[in-house]
Image 1 (cartoon, rainbow, N blue to C red):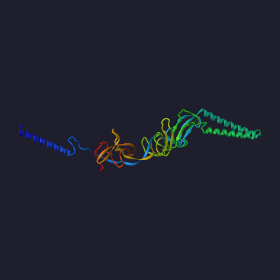
Image 2: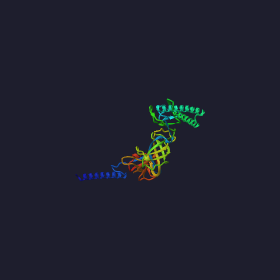
Image 3: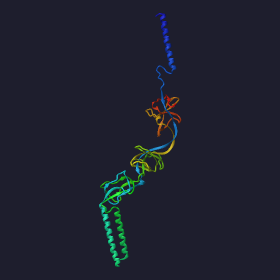
Length: 353
Protein backbone atom coordinates (compact mmCIF):
# COMPACT_ATOMS: atom_id res chain seq x y z
CA UNK A 1 0.00 0.00 0.00
CA UNK A 2 1.31 3.46 -0.91
CA UNK A 3 1.95 6.15 1.62
CA UNK A 4 -0.91 8.24 0.24
CA UNK A 5 -3.37 5.38 0.61
CA UNK A 6 -2.29 4.72 4.19
CA UNK A 7 -2.77 8.38 5.01
CA UNK A 8 -6.31 8.31 3.72
CA UNK A 9 -7.19 5.18 5.77
CA UNK A 10 -5.72 6.71 8.91
CA UNK A 11 -7.67 9.90 8.45
CA UNK A 12 -10.91 7.97 7.96
CA UNK A 13 -10.37 5.92 11.12
CA UNK A 14 -9.73 9.08 13.11
CA UNK A 15 -13.01 10.56 11.91
CA UNK A 16 -14.95 7.41 12.91
CA UNK A 17 -13.36 7.37 16.38
CA UNK A 18 -14.19 11.05 16.81
CA UNK A 19 -17.84 10.48 15.88
CA UNK A 20 -18.20 7.50 18.26
CA UNK A 21 -16.68 9.45 21.13
CA UNK A 22 -18.95 12.42 20.42
CA UNK A 23 -22.01 10.18 20.33
CA UNK A 24 -21.02 8.52 23.62
CA UNK A 25 -20.49 11.89 25.28
CA UNK A 26 -23.89 13.06 24.06
CA UNK A 27 -25.58 9.97 25.53
CA UNK A 28 -23.73 10.47 28.78
CA UNK A 29 -24.90 14.08 28.91
CA UNK A 30 -28.50 12.82 28.56
CA UNK A 31 -28.01 10.47 31.52
CA UNK A 32 -27.91 7.10 29.74
CA UNK A 33 -25.93 4.78 27.61
CA UNK A 34 -26.68 2.73 24.59
CA UNK A 35 -28.48 0.16 26.82
CA UNK A 36 -30.04 2.62 29.33
CA UNK A 37 -33.87 2.57 29.67
CA UNK A 38 -35.78 5.82 30.02
CA UNK A 39 -36.86 6.81 33.60
CA UNK A 40 -40.25 5.30 34.58
CA UNK A 41 -42.83 7.73 35.94
CA UNK A 42 -46.19 6.82 37.51
CA UNK A 43 -49.06 9.04 38.56
CA UNK A 44 -50.52 8.31 42.02
CA UNK A 45 -52.68 9.91 44.66
CA UNK A 46 -51.28 10.26 48.15
CA UNK A 47 -52.60 10.53 51.70
CA UNK A 48 -50.88 11.24 55.01
CA UNK A 49 -50.11 8.71 57.70
CA UNK A 50 -52.15 9.70 60.75
CA UNK A 51 -51.61 9.16 64.47
CA UNK A 52 -55.02 8.48 66.01
CA UNK A 53 -56.70 7.25 69.19
CA UNK A 54 -57.87 3.74 68.30
CA UNK A 55 -60.21 1.41 70.15
CA UNK A 56 -59.04 -2.03 71.29
CA UNK A 57 -61.75 -4.27 69.90
CA UNK A 58 -62.33 -8.02 70.18
CA UNK A 59 -64.73 -9.68 67.76
CA UNK A 60 -67.05 -12.48 68.87
CA UNK A 61 -70.06 -14.23 67.37
CA UNK A 62 -73.42 -15.27 68.76
CA UNK A 63 -77.12 -15.79 68.12
CA UNK A 64 -80.27 -13.87 68.98
CA UNK A 65 -82.26 -15.44 71.79
CA UNK A 66 -85.34 -14.65 73.81
CA UNK A 67 -84.33 -12.73 76.91
CA UNK A 68 -84.50 -15.30 79.74
CA UNK A 69 -85.94 -12.66 82.09
CA UNK A 70 -88.92 -12.05 79.77
CA UNK A 71 -90.10 -15.58 78.98
CA UNK A 72 -93.08 -17.55 80.31
CA UNK A 73 -93.79 -21.25 80.08
CA UNK A 74 -97.25 -22.67 79.41
CA UNK A 75 -97.44 -25.85 81.50
CA UNK A 76 -99.88 -28.74 81.35
CA UNK A 77 -102.77 -27.97 83.74
CA UNK A 78 -103.36 -31.70 84.25
CA UNK A 79 -102.28 -35.04 82.81
CA UNK A 80 -103.24 -34.86 79.15
CA UNK A 81 -102.68 -36.04 75.59
CA UNK A 82 -101.64 -33.52 72.92
CA UNK A 83 -104.23 -33.62 70.15
CA UNK A 84 -103.24 -30.77 67.80
CA UNK A 85 -100.65 -27.99 67.69
CA UNK A 86 -102.03 -24.67 66.48
CA UNK A 87 -99.12 -22.29 67.14
CA UNK A 88 -95.72 -22.52 65.45
CA UNK A 89 -92.24 -21.55 66.64
CA UNK A 90 -91.52 -17.95 65.71
CA UNK A 91 -95.19 -16.99 65.56
CA UNK A 92 -96.39 -13.85 67.34
CA UNK A 93 -99.57 -14.49 69.33
CA UNK A 94 -102.13 -12.23 70.99
CA UNK A 95 -103.67 -12.67 74.45
CA UNK A 96 -106.24 -15.46 74.35
CA UNK A 97 -105.07 -16.82 71.00
CA UNK A 98 -105.35 -20.65 70.73
CA UNK A 99 -102.03 -22.47 70.99
CA UNK A 100 -102.94 -26.17 71.08
CA UNK A 101 -105.78 -28.65 71.64
CA UNK A 102 -105.45 -31.37 74.27
CA UNK A 103 -107.48 -34.34 75.47
CA UNK A 104 -107.84 -35.48 79.06
CA UNK A 105 -105.60 -38.40 79.98
CA UNK A 106 -107.25 -41.34 81.80
CA UNK A 107 -105.50 -40.32 85.02
CA UNK A 108 -106.93 -36.78 84.90
CA UNK A 109 -110.42 -38.10 84.08
CA UNK A 110 -110.22 -40.34 87.10
CA UNK A 111 -109.01 -37.48 89.31
CA UNK A 112 -111.97 -35.34 88.21
CA UNK A 113 -114.47 -38.12 88.89
CA UNK A 114 -112.97 -38.70 92.33
CA UNK A 115 -113.23 -35.00 93.15
CA UNK A 116 -116.84 -34.92 91.92
CA UNK A 117 -117.80 -37.95 94.01
CA UNK A 118 -116.02 -36.53 97.05
CA UNK A 119 -118.02 -33.31 96.75
CA UNK A 120 -121.32 -35.19 96.41
CA UNK A 121 -120.45 -37.37 99.39
CA UNK A 122 -119.41 -34.40 101.54
CA UNK A 123 -122.60 -32.52 100.69
CA UNK A 124 -124.73 -35.57 101.58
CA UNK A 125 -122.83 -36.12 104.82
CA UNK A 126 -123.30 -32.48 105.83
CA UNK A 127 -127.06 -32.77 105.28
CA UNK A 128 -127.14 -35.92 107.41
CA UNK A 129 -125.16 -34.35 110.26
CA UNK A 130 -127.36 -31.25 110.13
CA UNK A 131 -130.45 -33.42 110.64
CA UNK A 132 -128.84 -35.16 113.60
CA UNK A 133 -127.85 -31.86 115.18
CA UNK A 134 -131.37 -30.55 114.72
CA UNK A 135 -132.63 -33.66 116.53
CA UNK A 136 -130.03 -33.19 119.27
CA UNK A 137 -128.44 -36.48 118.25
CA UNK A 138 -125.08 -35.06 117.16
CA UNK A 139 -122.67 -32.49 118.58
CA UNK A 140 -121.87 -29.14 117.00
CA UNK A 141 -118.25 -30.13 116.46
CA UNK A 142 -119.43 -32.89 114.14
CA UNK A 143 -121.36 -30.29 112.16
CA UNK A 144 -118.28 -28.06 112.00
CA UNK A 145 -116.18 -30.96 110.69
CA UNK A 146 -118.83 -31.77 108.05
CA UNK A 147 -118.94 -28.14 106.90
CA UNK A 148 -115.13 -28.10 106.54
CA UNK A 149 -115.15 -31.39 104.65
CA UNK A 150 -117.64 -29.99 102.15
CA UNK A 151 -115.58 -26.81 101.74
CA UNK A 152 -112.47 -28.86 101.03
CA UNK A 153 -114.35 -31.03 98.53
CA UNK A 154 -115.75 -27.94 96.79
CA UNK A 155 -112.25 -26.45 96.54
CA UNK A 156 -110.80 -29.65 95.08
CA UNK A 157 -113.62 -29.90 92.52
CA UNK A 158 -113.20 -26.23 91.57
CA UNK A 159 -109.48 -26.80 91.01
CA UNK A 160 -110.21 -29.76 88.77
CA UNK A 161 -112.70 -27.73 86.74
CA UNK A 162 -110.24 -24.84 86.43
CA UNK A 163 -107.73 -27.30 84.97
CA UNK A 164 -110.28 -28.48 82.42
CA UNK A 165 -111.60 -31.44 84.38
CA UNK A 166 -114.82 -32.76 82.97
CA UNK A 167 -113.93 -31.64 79.43
CA UNK A 168 -113.02 -34.34 76.93
CA UNK A 169 -111.12 -31.81 74.78
CA UNK A 170 -109.63 -28.49 75.82
CA UNK A 171 -108.05 -25.57 73.96
CA UNK A 172 -105.02 -24.01 75.65
CA UNK A 173 -104.60 -20.27 74.95
CA UNK A 174 -101.92 -17.60 75.36
CA UNK A 175 -102.19 -15.70 78.60
CA UNK A 176 -100.46 -12.64 77.12
CA UNK A 177 -98.97 -11.35 73.88
CA UNK A 178 -95.66 -12.88 72.93
CA UNK A 179 -93.54 -14.82 70.48
CA UNK A 180 -93.52 -18.62 70.49
CA UNK A 181 -89.86 -19.53 70.99
CA UNK A 182 -90.21 -23.19 71.90
CA UNK A 183 -92.66 -26.08 71.71
CA UNK A 184 -91.73 -29.07 73.84
CA UNK A 185 -94.38 -31.55 72.68
CA UNK A 186 -95.82 -33.08 69.53
CA UNK A 187 -99.27 -34.43 68.65
CA UNK A 188 -99.90 -37.73 70.41
CA UNK A 189 -97.58 -37.04 73.34
CA UNK A 190 -98.81 -37.94 76.82
CA UNK A 191 -97.64 -35.39 79.37
CA UNK A 192 -97.90 -35.15 83.14
CA UNK A 193 -99.39 -32.27 85.06
CA UNK A 194 -97.11 -29.19 85.17
CA UNK A 195 -94.95 -30.45 82.28
CA UNK A 196 -93.68 -27.63 80.00
CA UNK A 197 -95.61 -27.33 76.74
CA UNK A 198 -94.82 -23.99 75.08
CA UNK A 199 -92.37 -21.17 75.85
CA UNK A 200 -93.45 -17.61 75.06
CA UNK A 201 -91.20 -14.54 75.00
CA UNK A 202 -92.37 -10.97 75.38
CA UNK A 203 -92.36 -9.19 72.03
CA UNK A 204 -89.14 -7.20 71.59
CA UNK A 205 -87.46 -8.73 74.65
CA UNK A 206 -84.46 -10.31 72.94
CA UNK A 207 -80.75 -10.51 73.59
CA UNK A 208 -77.64 -11.93 71.97
CA UNK A 209 -75.85 -14.89 73.48
CA UNK A 210 -72.15 -14.60 72.62
CA UNK A 211 -69.28 -17.06 72.78
CA UNK A 212 -66.08 -15.33 73.98
CA UNK A 213 -62.67 -16.88 73.44
CA UNK A 214 -60.86 -17.36 76.76
CA UNK A 215 -57.76 -15.19 76.89
CA UNK A 216 -58.97 -12.82 74.16
CA UNK A 217 -59.37 -10.02 76.70
CA UNK A 218 -60.53 -8.99 80.15
CA UNK A 219 -64.27 -8.94 79.43
CA UNK A 220 -66.64 -7.47 82.00
CA UNK A 221 -70.29 -6.53 82.28
CA UNK A 222 -70.76 -3.00 80.97
CA UNK A 223 -68.23 -3.23 78.12
CA UNK A 224 -69.55 -1.41 75.01
CA UNK A 225 -70.45 -3.71 72.12
CA UNK A 226 -71.58 -3.15 68.53
CA UNK A 227 -73.91 -5.88 67.28
CA UNK A 228 -74.18 -6.45 63.53
CA UNK A 229 -76.29 -9.16 61.81
CA UNK A 230 -74.04 -11.60 59.96
CA UNK A 231 -76.59 -11.66 57.13
CA UNK A 232 -76.28 -7.89 56.73
CA UNK A 233 -78.20 -4.95 58.13
CA UNK A 234 -77.77 -2.00 60.48
CA UNK A 235 -75.70 -2.29 63.64
CA UNK A 236 -77.03 -1.86 67.17
CA UNK A 237 -75.13 -0.38 70.11
CA UNK A 238 -75.36 -2.26 73.40
CA UNK A 239 -73.32 -3.30 76.45
CA UNK A 240 -72.49 -6.67 77.91
CA UNK A 241 -75.07 -7.46 80.57
CA UNK A 242 -73.45 -10.70 81.76
CA UNK A 243 -70.09 -12.42 81.33
CA UNK A 244 -69.77 -16.01 82.52
CA UNK A 245 -66.89 -17.37 84.52
CA UNK A 246 -66.90 -20.92 83.13
CA UNK A 247 -66.30 -22.30 79.63
CA UNK A 248 -68.86 -24.26 77.68
CA UNK A 249 -67.79 -27.95 77.59
CA UNK A 250 -68.71 -28.22 73.89
CA UNK A 251 -67.63 -24.90 72.34
CA UNK A 252 -64.90 -24.13 74.92
CA UNK A 253 -66.04 -20.49 74.91
CA UNK A 254 -67.31 -18.23 77.68
CA UNK A 255 -71.00 -17.27 77.54
CA UNK A 256 -71.89 -13.59 77.52
CA UNK A 257 -75.19 -11.79 76.99
CA UNK A 258 -75.91 -8.37 75.45
CA UNK A 259 -79.45 -6.89 75.26
CA UNK A 260 -80.83 -6.24 71.78
CA UNK A 261 -83.94 -4.24 72.60
CA UNK A 262 -85.70 -2.69 69.63
CA UNK A 263 -83.72 -4.48 66.92
CA UNK A 264 -85.99 -6.23 64.38
CA UNK A 265 -84.01 -9.49 64.33
CA UNK A 266 -85.54 -12.96 64.45
CA UNK A 267 -84.64 -15.35 67.23
CA UNK A 268 -81.83 -17.61 66.07
CA UNK A 269 -80.25 -15.02 63.74
CA UNK A 270 -76.44 -14.87 63.68
CA UNK A 271 -74.74 -11.75 65.04
CA UNK A 272 -71.17 -10.42 64.95
CA UNK A 273 -70.14 -8.47 68.05
CA UNK A 274 -67.30 -5.94 68.30
CA UNK A 275 -66.53 -5.53 71.99
CA UNK A 276 -64.53 -2.47 73.08
CA UNK A 277 -62.03 -3.28 75.83
CA UNK A 278 -59.99 -0.06 75.80
CA UNK A 279 -58.06 2.26 73.49
CA UNK A 280 -54.52 3.06 72.33
CA UNK A 281 -52.69 5.48 70.03
CA UNK A 282 -51.59 4.14 66.66
CA UNK A 283 -50.71 5.00 63.06
CA UNK A 284 -53.26 4.52 60.28
CA UNK A 285 -53.22 4.67 56.49
CA UNK A 286 -55.97 4.27 53.89
CA UNK A 287 -56.72 0.58 53.33
CA UNK A 288 -55.89 0.98 49.60
CA UNK A 289 -52.38 2.18 50.46
CA UNK A 290 -51.31 -1.25 51.77
CA UNK A 291 -49.93 -3.60 49.12
CA UNK A 292 -50.24 -7.31 49.86
CA UNK A 293 -48.02 -9.48 47.68
CA UNK A 294 -45.41 -12.22 47.86
CA UNK A 295 -42.71 -9.80 49.05
CA UNK A 296 -44.65 -8.95 52.19
CA UNK A 297 -47.15 -6.31 53.32
CA UNK A 298 -45.84 -2.84 52.50
CA UNK A 299 -46.65 0.77 51.67
CA UNK A 300 -44.92 3.20 49.35
CA UNK A 301 -43.79 6.37 51.10
CA UNK A 302 -43.59 9.19 48.55
CA UNK A 303 -40.64 11.49 49.21
CA UNK A 304 -38.72 13.73 46.81
CA UNK A 305 -40.69 12.46 43.82
CA UNK A 306 -39.71 8.85 44.57
CA UNK A 307 -41.81 5.91 45.81
CA UNK A 308 -39.93 4.13 48.59
CA UNK A 309 -41.17 0.70 49.64
CA UNK A 310 -41.52 0.26 53.41
CA UNK A 311 -42.58 -3.06 54.92
CA UNK A 312 -45.20 -2.73 57.67
CA UNK A 313 -47.25 -4.78 60.06
CA UNK A 314 -50.99 -4.53 59.40
CA UNK A 315 -53.48 -4.42 62.27
CA UNK A 316 -57.22 -3.89 62.65
CA UNK A 317 -59.34 -1.93 60.20
CA UNK A 318 -61.10 1.25 61.31
CA UNK A 319 -63.60 2.12 58.61
CA UNK A 320 -61.64 2.82 55.40
CA UNK A 321 -58.33 3.04 57.28
CA UNK A 322 -56.10 0.36 58.74
CA UNK A 323 -53.55 0.42 61.55
CA UNK A 324 -49.90 -0.12 60.56
CA UNK A 325 -46.67 -0.54 62.48
CA UNK A 326 -43.08 -0.30 61.30
CA UNK A 327 -40.51 2.31 60.22
CA UNK A 328 -43.10 4.92 59.25
CA UNK A 329 -44.14 8.18 60.91
CA UNK A 330 -47.18 10.40 61.16
CA UNK A 331 -47.30 13.02 58.42
CA UNK A 332 -45.47 10.98 55.79
CA UNK A 333 -47.29 10.73 52.46
CA UNK A 334 -48.12 7.27 51.14
CA UNK A 335 -49.29 6.29 47.66
CA UNK A 336 -52.95 5.25 47.55
CA UNK A 337 -54.37 4.99 44.03
CA UNK A 338 -51.76 3.38 41.82
CA UNK A 339 -49.83 1.82 44.70
CA UNK A 340 -50.06 -1.69 43.24
CA UNK A 341 -48.24 -0.58 40.06
CA UNK A 342 -45.24 0.89 41.84
CA UNK A 343 -41.73 -0.44 42.26
CA UNK A 344 -39.22 0.56 44.88
CA UNK A 345 -37.46 3.78 43.88
CA UNK A 346 -39.77 4.55 40.98
CA UNK A 347 -40.25 8.19 40.04
CA UNK A 348 -43.83 9.25 40.71
CA UNK A 349 -46.06 12.20 40.13
CA UNK A 350 -48.76 13.17 42.62
CA UNK A 351 -52.05 13.61 40.75
CA UNK A 352 -53.22 16.08 43.38
CA UNK A 353 -50.35 18.52 42.80
